[in-house]
Length: 107
Image (spheres, rainbow, N blue to C red):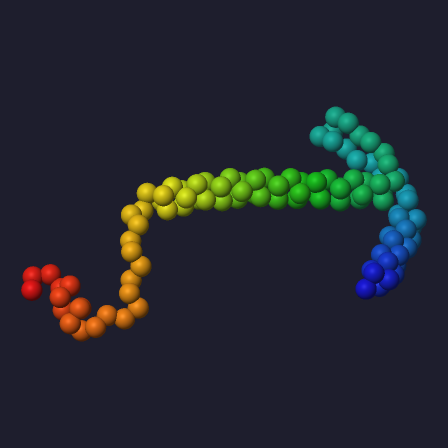
């Protein structure tokens, strides 16, 4: 399985290398008409991809942190509820009819 992964990685790398060599013409990136910057197209695409990955990882990290805090709070609440709950004796597996009748209130 490891060899297959290396082969697929090598094929993807070679394909991206050919794409980058074909898209080396310069492009101009303008930021709010105040600043313009010229760079190869493949470099601009790489920066946009890296920024998208970084934003996605940041949003996922924020969500994971919020869920961890919620899980910790729920565990604390559960532990507190278990400590304050009255201890009940375990129920008997079988009870005879006469024993059951003697436990009924009002009789």
